[in-house]
Amino acid sequence: MRNNLAPFRAATLLLLVIGNIILPHILADDAEEILSAKPLQQPEQWQNDLVNWLISKPNGYFSDKVLWTKTEMGYNMHAAEDIPKDTTLMIIPQAALITSDGTDEECITISKMMKEYEKGEASEFYPYIRYLFGGHEGGTSTGLLPTTWSEPAKDLLKQMVGTDLYPKQFEKSQKRILVDCQEFIDRKELESMSKETAQKWQDAFIFWVSRSWSDKMVPILDMINHRNGKWLNVESTTAHSGQDIRVYALRDIKKGEQLWNTYNECLDEDCNYGRIKYSYITQHILMDYGFVEAYPRRFIFHVDAKGTDRNNKQFLIVEIDEDPEDPTKRTFEWHFRKPTDAQLHWIYNQLSRLKDMEFTMEEGLKALPDGHEKDTILAFYLAYREAFQLAMVHKDDDVSDNTFYPELPDEHEEEHDHEHEEEHDEEDDEEEDGDEL
Image 1: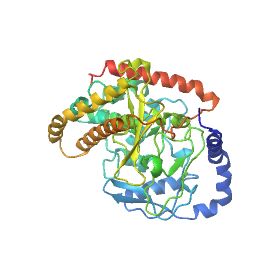
Image 2: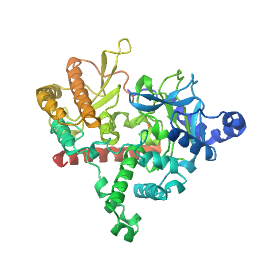
Image 3: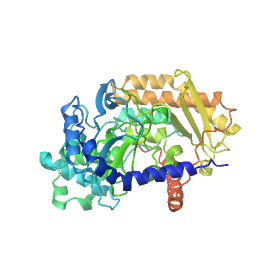
Image 4: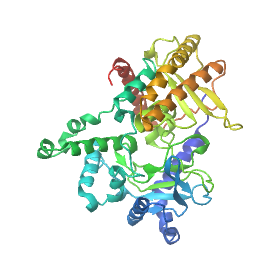
């Protein structure tokens, strides 16, 4: 039996209404009070430049309660003081977005990024474009995604996932970007393009993959990192309504807490109203963003009830989190279905395979230079081992009571079913092409 989602759907509709219709009037009434609060001085000039650029736009806003703070993971946004639930943290106006002009054509968004890059300081998006392409601390590294890794790192990841784990085909099409988007590039420019400029086009493609809301680049909001569970404390209104985007506190946020957004549990069409929570998970986040997400993590085990026929699509979905009573321990949940004996046999074999390749992993990691590739491959290896180990420990557990059964507004049901079918078709294609890296 499905959960009663009437409160959830009502809350979602209310958030959309507040964010897209009522909000402009609230801002009009309280504009003097809101806009009179100057943003805090940020630690680095590039951060101040971004904030000043944002608030220079009509309706642009950046809260005086938000401060970039440097941690061992680099700069992240934190609460400079206690922030009550529903407090507006940012307003990203439509004028600050880089979009496809309503076409949903990513090549338009990518070509716009390139045009703004070529303008240099004359670009109206200069602080953001400099952040993307700059390569300085706080900028966007182009080597985060597995598709951009060195060949030895890709080979080691390929050995780790073997024939049954994911991601199998983690190469993106950045090397084809000039072919795929050639109709948006001047022919003479294309014929005389330097290697450096061609690389920038590939970089822009990677920025689009890892930072966009479909066809839209949303500056500064895209700098809030991802984490779900009890850590998630930021939400935003949809980027697809044509209205300014309101970023707000999802719950009370304590002073010093890092701000955390979600890449797969948002409340609008970007996350299919919650439905991609169980289909766009840890493996996909590694592929599209280049990191192994912190707890909670979800894994899909691509094996059906018989242990062999993947086309049946009766896969297993598991979730691992920190124990709320003891963060050194882990909780484990089965979502939607429990494993069959055949599936448990498959899990046992995968766990044994990963244990047996400890030496291979150790030697492969030694050969890689210290840094992101080495750290990420090790983290992914350990995360997969932990998931299989816990699955065996909890093999007799019932399906979780926390499994979320979202309901879409009627007009989105057919669209989601079609996308879900395409997703599994792509997975089947990846299995056939798994050796192509």
